[in-house]
Amino acid sequence: GTAGYGGCSSGYQLTYDSVFKALENNFRRFDTAEAEGWYCQEAVGTALRDYTAKRVIDEADKGIDISVDEAMLEEALENADDNASFDPMSAMGGMAGGMGGMGGAMGGMGGEKQQRKLEREQERARKKAECEKDPSKCDEATARTMNKAPPRHEKISCASLRLRISSKIAPYDVTSSDNIRKHAEKTRKQLLGFCDMFSIRSAIAKGDGSMPEPFPLDVYYLHAPECWEGWHPKCETGEEMTMSLREAWEAMELVKKDKNAVKIGLSNVSEEELQDIIDFVKERWAKSMETGEPTNAIMPHVIQNHADPLEPNIDMRLLCQENGIDFVSYSTLGTQQEFNEEGENPVLTDAVVKKMAEKYERSEAEVVLSWALQSGMSVIPRSQDEEHIKQLSNLITDPSFVSWEDLDEIDTISIE
Image: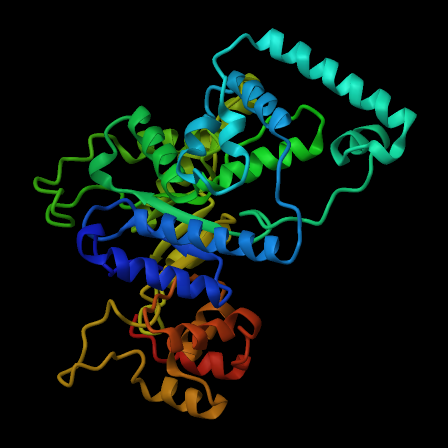
């Protein structure tokens, strides 16, 4: 998670360093948000880009070819013009100098397409004839199209790194369907726009004329069901969110249709609000079945709400489970709780949690996160301390070290 580091004016470097350190310790899922002053998406996106570039350079140092064929790149970009929802030119804007030869491939895009296409076809025909006459003169691209040679070594990309990045639209920006969709697209580009060049490269490598697609967010959430007065500095009156939750959800469904996110979700909702959206989706499914008309109705994929051992949010989690909705817990380590007179976190200092930490020779934080993961939740812990990040990374390979009997004992500390 990247909450709590502040906006870009005060928290840029802290956010960047935390994300980069986490990436170096094999974390691949990150959660951020658009809320100004609370998060810095720019720093998250830059850290993701810089880490990926570092990995690409590492691959090049190993002698793995990372070049692209410029003529094929130009053709792929031209073909992508037909896809109004994807602009490879702008998506690649921040990557100047990142891949050799890309700059030259961009030149002359405004010329006559048909003439260039004819010239490419003639050049390929010439290369093919040359290949057939003397295979030793074949370049790799021509050989691959002629004999379907196996692909080269899988290169580093956002997909191969398994990056899963989530963000949220602030309720004060939930003012129209178009605005929600524009925010989703802008956020995707800010966080993962650099990934689109890998999609272009992949489309080129296939050699089948397929069109590159944008690399999507993992989840795009509505950050809150309304702009409660005082919730954020921009929620001054409580009326800044001008759409109902149902109307906002219909717009969110289009975010997925636009391919700006794989999944869509809700955050900070009550059980009643989630149930209403579930009913809303089911009503539209039933109507579609009755009339035969298609519908965009999509059940929420994910709910992100607070849960920790003291307040495990059991009823909400059960509602999610009944409807096939994933539950992501924030503040799992007790940061939402009121600290005691000594300023101590009541979750991490709980006697049961401390006993388990001693028993398993793990930190209290690891015990609590293991409890959450084994209870069916996903978690988004955050840390700026490198040693703590390394400690938490142990959960990637060993998340289930707490026994079921001990999990039951942790459940007994709930105050709900």
